Image (tube, rainbow, N blue to C red; front, side, top):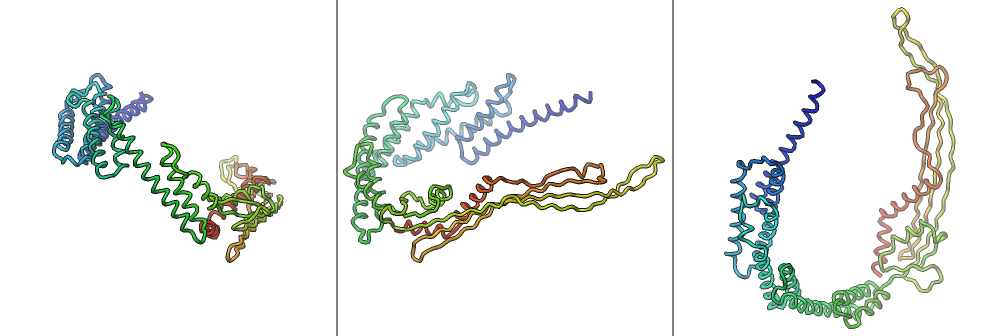
Length: 420
């Protein structure tokens, strides 16, 4: 009997947990209802009921009236909104019809919904979608009258999407295409003009302004690309992107090393171009020199004399103390990798940086000999971990990259590059 009790306790605990979870779902629904978050409230209610209706003997008499009343209030709230707000408050009506559609969809997918509401019978999906599409259509027409081609295009497209399941809604798709073309054309022209002015008004030939011009021309090309090329926006974007590139001339004693690549990645800002000495004119010079010093394992051994008094029982039952005298031998091993990076930049004033990173590893091997107590406290063991040369190199390199990333002087060089 005693063995069965833990199993019964576990079952009782599991049952209580399920009951609490279900109650939490309904209480969450009520809380969401009070906050006016009606769609979430209905969803939480249905999650609760879904779980309850898995049981054939579920009796909803305690909750039925409350659920019915909340659903009635929710429906009346949306109905009041669409009936009382002004004809120009498109967004409020759109939100109301969207929520009603979401609630109707959730309810209609449950076989038990009729016990609580007849909303899905009175608000057919096709009707809700038609009303939703109609409000988007009216919003689009108002935007078109106000010369807001982009909003008109978006709203006509939303009108088409809302009713698409049942076919075309008036001429919404055609008008969406029309106003999208108008909006894209207008925006492309604006970006193109912006690029033209930036390129023309650059007496100091600043590369940052050329990059801004390149971006403006690219935006003109990109926003219009669905309709074809926009004038010569794409070639102009390429032209000014090249003119805006900042060329860094690199000198390195290890041009193909991981460290050199990692350092250069810090200055690859999307518009920088690297060339090695002899490659032509450059905006900035950068000199890297990397050196390594590996310190192979060094060994140090020392011995400590130890003793311990241990009580034990004698044959006659009395307690005695025995003194154990033994030795503790410690063998320490340590190795290290040092990376030194010298980084010089030909800015004004020149900047010379040195980074010195050392990665170390240590291991101690501890053993005991002599008259060692047999209590298990003095066994052979190692402490620490001795890395090999490659592991140390990678650890030192990671330290170096972290140091570079956190160095404000590196950010200062990046700002210099941006300001060309």
